[in-house]
Length: 132
Picture (cartoon, rainbow, N blue to C red):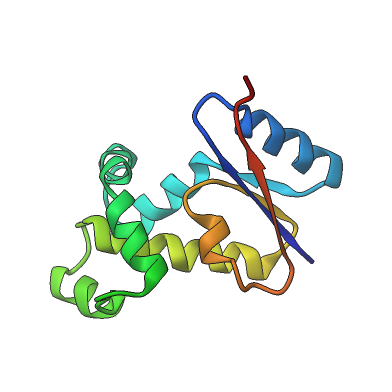
């Protein structure tokens, strides 16, 4: 059981590529469903998660380099759910994407999945970049 990640640039056709690859292999395709999963875990609306996602680039970089992270449990237990910030968003992405990879037979579009799964044994990473 493997997982394929697709990194992308805006307008490069990553969603189309992911859809085609997942159908060809019979894999599940995860894009906006990950937003729904994060929202469900944090007990917030998917609109709130999408707004956090737009601001989370610098936090994602911190996560990737493992600088100054608090544990997810420390933050969420203090908040009693129903809250999300950039750090919680990144921790939830890590947890959800890692779980999807463990379940296997998945194509995951963006959201730093290529970094989160960079050392995952059965992960294969593709890039969708616009041509010119």
